[in-house]
Image (cartoon, rainbow, N blue to C red):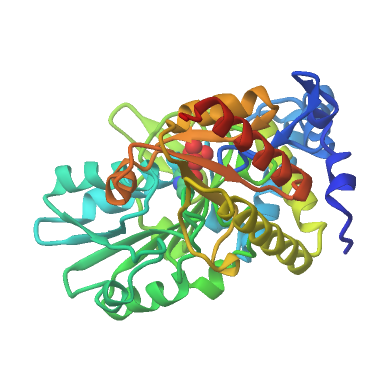
Length: 411
Ligand SMILES: Cc1ncc(COP(=O)(O)O)c(C=O)c1O
């Protein structure tokens, strides 16, 4: 295990050799997607140059190699989550697809009027719209856990998080807007006590925190490759075998059946029955390379570094008049995202002016419109950290904000 400086880490990422508007890029949009280290890019190229074939179908050498690499990647994803078996890992195109799979294959056939799905007021649309759809389809209802003034789940709501009517708790591990780390273990225990199942949206926690599905004891968990320094178009659904084995596939076609007749078919076992069609083999292989890359660092040191950098950012941004920060004030209670607003300036304008300074942040609703409504804002600016960021990036952000203030000064 090693812990190199952010500068040394940046050298692993070819994109940072590029200049933007004549300056190196201060990339602070990691919650949207992370940049890719050379090892991940090379894994993609290596697959297509040396091993490309379809899986599980051919009897030829290349097909066997591709199948082996794909299944090895499944094992790598299982180890990343400390899942008890690779058979608990379904490859999907990302978190969104993984949550929709659970919504359609587990929830839709099982929920009915009177049943309750519990969400939080900080869910990404990807962990909200699939449940709205299931609620419409089944007559189940949605209930929300509200937030306190610092964007954490309010204690009084957590105490009453679930009821006898709760069948499913769908909660984000880390908020993509506020950065808040939710006490998922506690919520899962509460859900289990009333016999409800749990799905954890780990899209924003997997890049920053160790995620252990056995310690969390959740029933399902989803994450995206592209947020953990892997490629786009690949993601993971973890599910306990007892659930996956009992679920019907949400989509069907080639590659997931044992036997097909004119009037029926027998599905393969889980997880393969949930992977209809040609899978994203190169994506899975490169995801495995990304997980190797991420876990090649000392996780505790990485987290310590991130907490310190978050503290630095909160302090530097907090000094600015007219700038309002959102999310927990304690850097240790958050991971990645640092949202803020600038008085009198639309977040899109802030992001655009910062872009002119080669500082990449996002301005918008961040696929969290109900959260924006709760906060009483149409949109926010969000800076979000990755493992290659350092205080220089935050200083560049602060300088860029000085320019925003200069442009919008009305005196
Ligand atoms: C918390 C959270 N959930 C779900 C998603 C959706 O991920 P994807 O677009 O990779 O499916 C995101 C992406 O921003 C996210 O931040």
